[in-house]
Length: 97
Image (cartoon, rainbow, N blue to C red; front, top):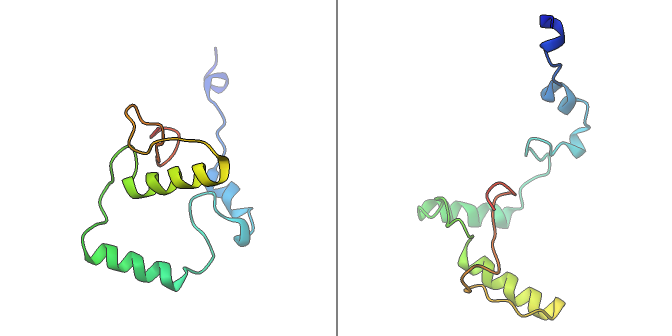
């Protein structure tokens, strides 16, 4: 087999990203939208209190409880945010799950 046949052509993700209009460029997690002032204030308070560390792998307990309440109210499904094994998990993507 020749070297040319063994070499795979890979797309240049940055070149592809540059083709997307700024209004839709979320490919690399970069939004062009302004940050809501309330969100920015709350984020600054969390950072100032040194609470901006990695959370538990199952997700923040408060968020899991809020999800439990939402699912019960709107989907009429009973789950427990505190069940073991976990019935509700919040991860930073499929790999984290």
